[in-house]
Length: 120
Image 1 (tube, helix red, strand yellow):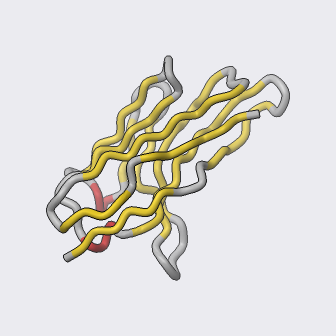
Image 2: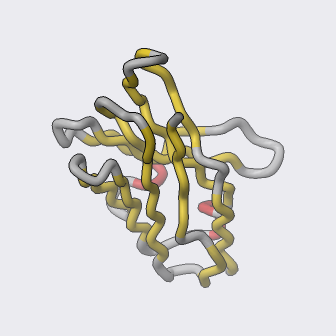
């Protein structure tokens, strides 16, 4: 069984910074892509940033230049450094991992979500 757990959300003023962390644990053989998605109230979940095991990254246009994703393959962790934050960044942020296990093969696993609120 695999567990994906986020931490680091909270309240920050506009222009401030937050760092989200996520760790995947369990019977994991490998993780291809890890990333962060967010879902604001009344909206669909959207990609924020993702990173492959090889280090290739992909960002939403709305966060380019402000957010940075990083990963430690040995620890199965991914972080999201968020700078110059805006009220429009307010959302529940979810960690995603494309996990490969011996019992279930390859599948998508999600964390429970962490609230990020940016005040103006």
